[in-house]
Amino acid sequence: MSETLDWPTVKTKLRWKQGEHVVAIAPTGAGKTTLFTELMPYRAANLFFGTKLADPMYNHMLRNMGYTRVEHMSEIRPWHKNKILLWPRKGKSIRETMQIQHDRFDEALNAIATDEQPWTLWLDEAKYAAENLGLKMPITYCVEQLRSIGGTVVCGAQRPAFVPQSVLSNASHAFLWKTTHRDDAIKLSDMGGIDARAIRDEALTLDAHEMLYIKTRGTQSQVIRTEVKKGT
Image 1: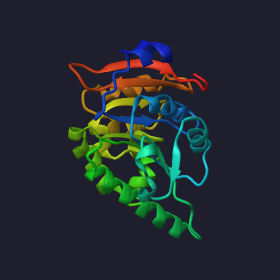
Image 2: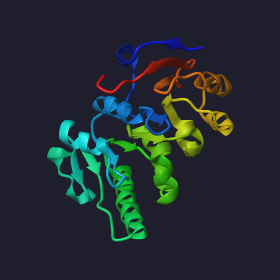
Image 3: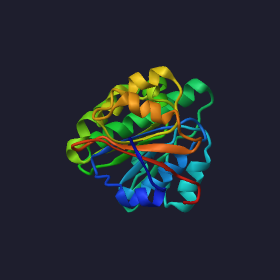
């Protein structure tokens, strides 16, 4: 049901418009981080939520991709507004760290929702932000309401079952790595315009770093089998 193409060719076919949401579902180490760094240059006004205490991807963004680290939305200035890593420092305890993250990210989501400029919001750990930090409501609002003004949300997760339903149902583009969990096929059915069972069956045959690129919008879905390698 899919065609197999290398990643450089897929990039020439990628028609990702501002206002179209993206979901990337991959187990740890499969290549989601590499994919994100490949996709970031496609968008302007990027705001990435840094949820981890340390991550090589964050360092790469700061050193090599022109991102600026801020801990609070008030630090953003017009001259570096296009590439922002919102990465709050940890607190003195787990509870305090999570409260700081909640407050900073909630403020950012509200700012995005009221800004005239359409942002591209990157949530590498969508489940953590939505459930653990209690941000499901504002994330859902941004996913469902900001498309009309060009707002774009990019969500990453380790399994389809971990992704909020509104994210899957509103995604125009999806990247799916191998999954063997039976309930993930049910969750994939939340994504409109695809044959969820057929997608899951093919996902079972993927190698460790292979993925399916699924374009869900249009007259019919498009499915491409590809692989993003480090250094592409």
